[in-house]
Image (cartoon, rainbow, N blue to C red; front, side):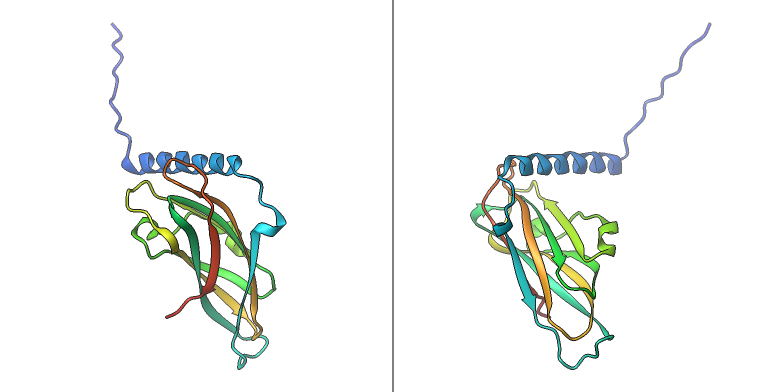
Length: 177
């Protein structure tokens, strides 16, 4: 008599979190598909001054604060792209934001950080969400040379908890100590 034995397997919590995260990122992409396509006028270029007392081949580290202003709408999800417009910038680290909803570092592709470009995304399913202008991330960069740096930011997605797109604006500034 052949009796099959069935084992009951518990799914580790880490796998459940990973599955939930993937589902949420798919929801972000779907929300992005429902938004109008980003036109050339929907990006912003920001110049951040560099020190004048640095030699052309000297490297220094700076931090860039990223803000999303969602007006009076609570911000539950965002995705944006930051690109250095000049050579000599390498993205070396990423932190989360000020508000509890975005305190953890956002999702990003570490391989993309080898270049001068990164796409960051985060979401929160909590009830306490920021509205208005909120620092959602801090990006650490290594910069070579004294000249001012120029960064291009493009907000790709901004949404409510229901995944509905909301109008928002992304801006950057040099981090204050």
